[in-house]
Amino acid sequence: MASGGWRDYWSLLHPPYTVWHLSYVAIGAAAAPTLRLLHLGAALMGFLLGLGVAAHAFDELRGRPLRTSIPDRTLWALGSLTLTAAIALGVAGAARVSWWLLAFVAAGGFLVLAYNLEVFGGAFHSVGWFAFAWGAFPALTGGFAQEGSLTPPILLAAGFCALTAIVQQVLSKPVRLLRRRTLDVRGRVTLDDGTEMRLDERALRAPPEGALRWLSLAMPLLAAALITARLP
Image 1 (tube, rainbow, N blue to C red):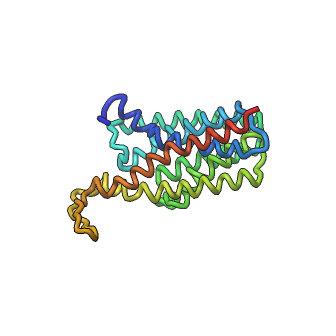
Image 2: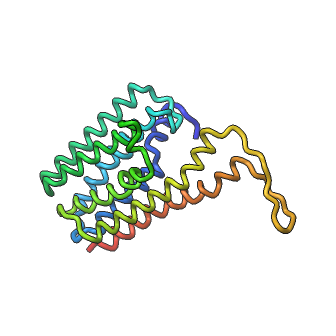
Image 3: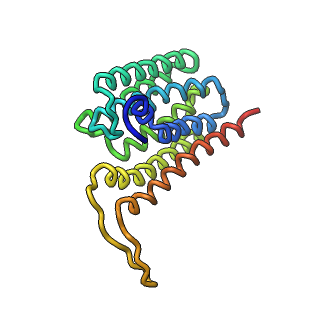
């Protein structure tokens, strides 16, 4: 996609990955004993603001990984406003569900800042923290927001989400390396029948990119199936 103007803001939202991680909220909610669609909708909106917008805005301040031309001042304002709105929504949810939800709100705000701004020397910017913050945590929050408790099914769902987040990281790492830092790739692969295949940057990133693309479609379908199955 071309860059500039509204396209930069669309790129900042990063729709495929944002929807992927919002799916974890729904998966956690579907694992709860009771499914309340209003609570699910509020949790999804909170994570859309905090994870989909604020996290990506702060992350873009660290080296421009999405290659947007949005001014730093705008990114700071956008990230701060949407994170504040997400926290406010979480506080309102805590008043309705359980005041223990405030612990999730505080943890979510901290993780957005610590991971994406790489505070504390980047100690929280790792695969393990990504698996928790972007995988397990949305599922735990989505499940807890239903009726204010964490049950074994919710914990198991969070484990699934953490592991698939690790898969995302494993597949994304070579793609980012090839797209952002590689100047040239030259080579060939010779098969046992003598056939030769050209080896270049596009050939190397096609398999992991394809896997990521299909997973970004599969995860929302799984979440939708689980929620639909819980409907009366």
